[in-house]
Length: 252
View 1 (tube, rainbow, N blue to C red):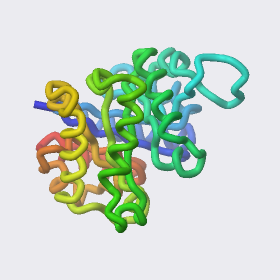
View 2 (cartoon, rainbow, N blue to C red; view 1 turned 180 degrees about the horizontal axis):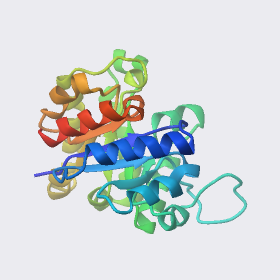
View 3 (cartoon, one colour; view 1 turned 120 degrees about the horizontal axis):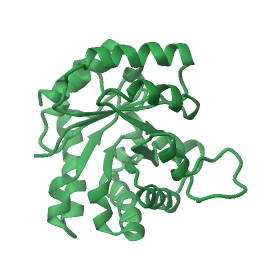
């Protein structure tokens, strides 16, 4: 049975004071919870603070991005080794905002996935279609292309060391969300694509849903057989809301 994972993506939000308060609240609210994995991915300048707070708990520290290079003249970039040294166990790769605003191609995402795996980080590989692509019936072809780029670069075995996150672009930060059945259909499709190369890896692969997940819809989403948790954006900035989402995942 796959162990649920709920990851908080704080995006470009937070001060040291707000990060401290939010982390303390989440730790207190989830104290003793051992049924799921919970990760917090703060902005890079808050990794040290959040990491120190998480050190005595059972939550995972993650980062929001990683460089495809190992070192050199790449101003502003952060290597996988730097993140590992900062205490990270997990890193988001290919988030739709990175693809949309920073022109990250499938090839770049595949390179970043490879770097994360080589360093010993768990990549959370984000996949998803735009509204135009969904309305045009291209959802499966888009996510298949995004997935295949990673498999071609890293091999299907890399999926055993990673996590997928299906995040329909049209449902991120919009208040809209895929229905539980719509989301599960895409998750099942992704799992079947991996199973075509390695059924055992596919069976153990965790696939998260990310797209305006809230406490109000978490229970229905997490009840779906191929949804193994969530990648939570805006709701992760509200302690009570995020804690309730995690509790729903634990009960799924």
